[in-house]
Image: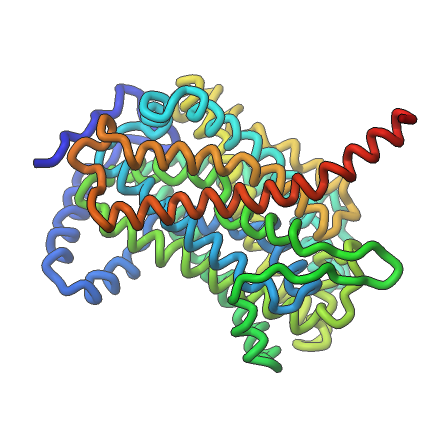
Length: 474
């Protein structure tokens, strides 16, 4: 006996037009056929299928992730290789729970969170989604414009930073709006996101293979969790590992990702029969690409930037220039720049989508309405990052990632409550030892974030209070 799914209300789902019922029927027939195959054969078919997991990769593989990984490798070599995989695997567990909840009930996630986890949790989750998308946006534009300027320099053309920011904005706005299109355009959007995710992985793989690994034992040891001692740098304050570690945890799964994902499931008309496909899609579309890409970035940074690391003034173009000696003065920079640009363009687009979606749910905006489009544009003042943060360095992504990361535990707690709610899930609430393991891992994902954030705040609080006393003359 299974619980009857909730019916979404009369509002159209934001970002979408009505589902193509004929296509959905064919999808269900394909799933029924696939269900008859052995487990391994099913996974191979799911791998070729793809789904909303790639949208999460497109969102999380951005400037924050790149900065955290490059700084991690540059400052501490291979010692923090464990951070991104741990954060993403635990995040994947939470996403599997989100998929189970959404596909089992069919209920709009914001409504479910407000009803069964409490209005404070629901509104905090939605507001945190908008704030995180806006906070991260400035750094994305600054890095994107810097990369385009560097590509112009390779071609012998001097390009204006702010002008390049406007070029990115001109690309991002129609792309974000196309996410609400129907039929062929929506499928084209999905394909572009999937191609760009794997293109990012491929570009960094080419660089890593060309670089080679001088010390495989050190790489293997880097996957064992540890907190390295502060890194001394010439003529500057030591670099602490804890902020970079927290930035790595916070950029693996953002609070805005947890908002986008369940709606992208509903937008496709997915239901109970898609639950195994959704779990496979999380693994193949989000967890694996992210773990591979971030590992490659850390390895590349450790191999090219670690010895000559200069501290917080290290910038993304310094990393690109470093690769010139590895792949040649042109192709080293071009490959690095293209990989970074792909990350930034997809993330900028998805930030806008997340903002529009969260506002649509909070205020009942209809897809395609003026209010919905305005909400989608809320993060776009971030284009000023290419004007006012023209000298942005990788380190400046760390505090913005920490700020956004503070909002994620609330979302994790909310989904933990939903996973244990009999009133919400009914007979679909997991039970037995598998449920215990699932809940334990969800609790661990929340605890890891909370503990490291608390360690950071406890470390920074005395410094902040000292600065306040000095400013007040106490």
